[in-house]
Image (cartoon, rainbow, N blue to C red):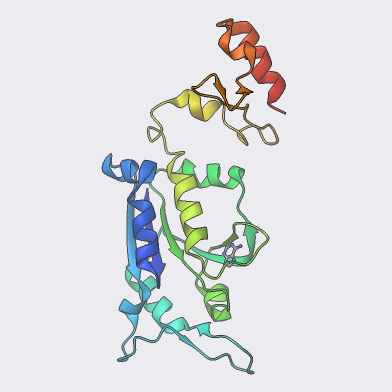
Length: 213
Ligand code: ADE
């Protein structure tokens, strides 16, 4: 799988994708993630990526030209162009699963800004508009990372322990994962449930099942 992320804050993306599971997934060759500074596709001295809105109003709007040029360079026949926007379809685990199914997929992810992106980008250049929830972020970088992380960790082989995927929250629509505890057995007077210390596998299974509501 390949992700090309287009952003005006490459450093934010860089830090995250080079940590934890996502870094390991890249090292093992399950996923290739490239970060692109949108300013690379500007040709003025100020590297302008946004401008004032037609019709007036506060804030700046991201320009279409640099995005168009970026896509012209990065896109192939099979690419899926995604954009972050609070107006998009809210990302759910079921969609994440669907996106992770094609291990050869190529996703281009454009990080929007909260003031907006020229609507002509949305109308003509994008296949999938997604939101990560009903709140407004100042930029799409966090949303892009949510997509990349949630899809990457589902790629076969990325999480060594398949069991940990199978028992996970949201896999089974509205079931939640059971509570987990680790050492010490007691902290500040707060105890680990007795059943988990019992070594009785059946009882533990039953207790966990009970909790997974
Ligand atoms: N940009 C601003 N807010 C966002 C959100 N909630 N999801 C995706 N992109 C966004």
